[in-house]
Length: 376
Ligand code: SF4
Image (tube, rainbow, N blue to C red; front, side, top):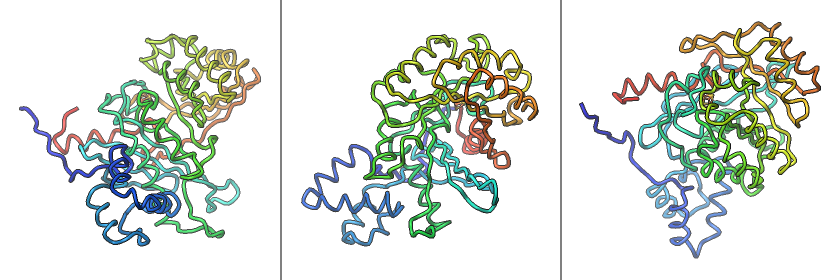
């Protein structure tokens, strides 16, 4: 039977869409300073509701609230434990995506919160089909718009404000790092990802340093070159996962389309053009890519490069048959790669309780779509 799509929520235009910004600037051209007030309220006061911007005239607040919305999606579900908060959002078309807030605590005082990192999505699900990733089993639905990408950061900063209030120095608690490592391949949605970056890094807006905003890719070659040429002010992470073409094709099926040695040449081009080192991400899986040979291959691949390897122990999921390697195995892998002079960090895996680790995203979404009668 053919399914008829009914938008689950009333449609409003996104405040940060190009179309809405043009319309509002024309409408309020004699009160341009009002835009600065709105931006200050959103980015510095962490407001996401026009009604709370009481320095604006009431009529303007009402008009804005009627015409548009700062957050162009709705919260469906929020799951929290002491390590992560996982937000499940739905766009106006009912498509769902996830955002994960990670807490980093002091190693000396467990109760002391050091910083917060937000892992944001760039697409609704993903086309890359990594075999270890639950999201990868779902296929791509659509790209997120720029306001949807930015909205994840604004929504969560507001959430943190409501939950944690101000620090001792009077400033708001907020996100310190943003990583484009949630659902989707960010470089397959490069124009919208790129458009969202200035809102994160510019002093006028959130003012995060480039070291604290990371875009990650697993294969999309053309956009790696474009991103290098654009000198986008972000850190770059390349999802390596295997250091030979054959094993990489097993884990990242899209890798068949572009050989690893050519991807590495593009990574070198990125380093030469921007002067930045690259973070290589390596999800380490028991009896798949954790052998001594794999470690030697990785050491040889990275030893002459400006590289920092992040080894991430696999986070098991009932939806995927892979297993996590033992801590001893992971440490041995690290030791071998380090022997080639490569910087290696073993990353702590977060979100096990709430299934919030990045390659576990998607499982609940599938259930929700089934519940709504949607189809994959
Ligand atoms: S790991 Fe990332 S790129 Fe690979 S399928 Fe999952 S979301 Fe897509």
